[in-house]
Length: 267
View 1 (cartoon, rainbow, N blue to C red):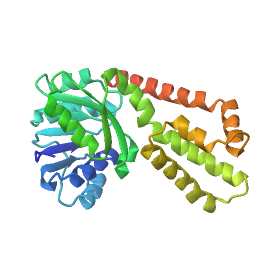
View 2: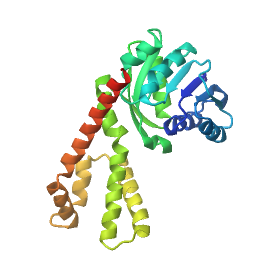
View 3: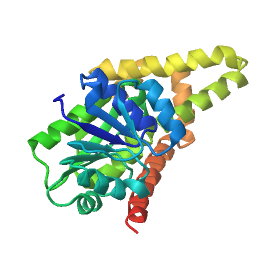
View 4: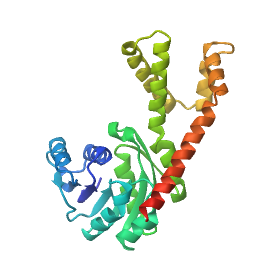
């Protein structure tokens, strides 16, 4: 990406993941600053990013990524704008473009995005929405930042809460399935030490197959399901238990919570 001073406000897991991704993508370490209020976390960041500026407060910058908790997003955005940032990308769940724009001022391009935790290993999936002051360069910035840790897809802002419920919270749903599979393995007589690597590889291999295949999830499912076979029996049990409906309900609940968090952040 272009060499311009960039500040990441918030040095937690996601902020650090984006920093790693940006450095891998070619951003010079001396052009990156991470702002973190916790002294202990600043020490951790200093060890992880020895050539990056680690600061307690926001310094002069051209652009900023807001990676703080939702209640702190507006203030962080305002501080970034006061420090000179002309483009601000927020990954704070539920915080609207209107709130961000109001905090930044009308002359700052603001972007609202929702990445997910696989960004920690460079396999993230993010949706982003552009504010009214954004330009082609603003979108390029969003794609470069979010794309440094996975894929980035442009959406309308009214879809961001659903993106949060789907891909933002989605990894937890899969981890929950992994927990259940490990528990099932133990019930079937496979001890945890053996079940653990098998379940991890099951999800990894299935994910890679899904990502690389041109077939739909339904087609891939049908390929592994022989009539009257073991997989058909297992799927019948899942359908009878309402698993599909439960997953839809989980995404719906997470989406609604994202909307509520946005409303809370505006109070």
